[in-house]
Image 1: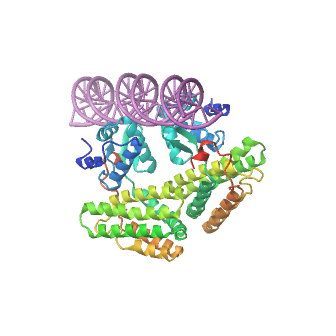
Image 2: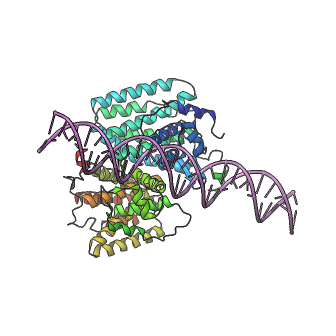
Image 3: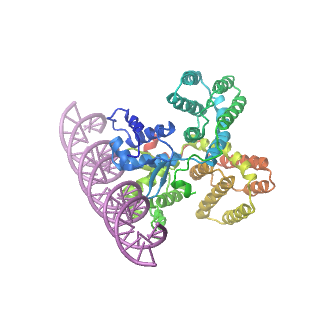
Length: 241
Length: 241
DNA sequence: TTCGCCCAGATTGTATGCAATCCTGTGTGG
DNA sequence: CCACACAGGATTGCATACAATCTGGGCGAA
């Protein structure tokens, strides 16, 4: 049993999914587990095992794994299987470089499109973040990382460009993975309420300032990481690089 | 026979593929066909039919189609099948908005990393573009669009960020589709040798100027489009929107 | 002992069969 | 004549069976 018991929490969804797309459901559950680090980087995702856990055939599991491989959360090797991605420090840097490039533009676009409804949604999001920030424990830390990502996703959603939104979905997910891998758990990972400052800038219509704050924010997130050495080196991948 | 005879040219590859990944091979051939507009937007890509053309089972075809759906070149509808994407004018605008946001940053990054080998590759690329630009005929036009995209991909490759490179792959592919759909074939689609100017700026190490030229270039490409009305309205999708 | 080879188990890659869903055209009732 | 219902055919969704490949251990020879 290579997959440990935390995975059993994957199955907290209504067992009888309606005629929806089961592959995408499994993809979402796996992605949550990866981003939350319930599935550690490098973990093998056996088709048969995942299929058993979700009670589907390997066919739909393969579709889900292919989707995750596309997002960069899973690395699929021919005839060897799929593994939870184990981003190198270099990859981590590229993730943040990409975010520094894209997110300011998103902020500027969002500033010009912010509706009262959007503001309300943002406020709810910030309250949730504060709540999690106050809590203690690894579980709250996971939820905090997740919620922090949701803020950025919400921003991309407001910007109104579905392509950029999808890019940001991928970047945020990979960021969560990177933070889980390289984060100095000592410092609050996304601590300060920079999100609130960003929202304030958006509300005042100052997209340029929001963009500026966002870059600073991303810098803070990256500065909290320790990208000097790769973790552990999971046996095999130490040689294949 | 919903797929017309031009598709037969898909099969110009060595019939006996080595033990490689056949799904990705099929994906690449289909993508080429879509970008070249040998497969018109809205065309149904029947699993059985594609499988017959490439002599594989539907399983492999499904994987290829799923990959193309991720890239946005194919729209897959549950229980209905996969269709060549038919981007709306709004989607087209978002593609170019995304490029205006991302490509300047790529240019700045590339300016600081341009090696002599890169320059040589760029020169070869420009020569190929000039050659195609001089030629006449729809076939040369296709190749020209493709080559123009390759220039931008090369730029992203030099920039050295694999994530941004993949984003650009998607954006360039979608741009080709959009140009094929909305391009005023009257004007030269990517005409002027702006690419040469961009390369010159890069060579002189002036990343800022390269970024500026790139934005102008993208604006020119978009300005050559007619995004006012949707083309033809492919029956079904006319009602579903 | 150590190296190399070979075989068995396990896992993925692919093809195929069946069930579910959707589209189309035909027939029936209003 | 039109609207609706339904049945036939075609296509996709999914599960399963088989083939190809990889992994790891055992055995024998140097």
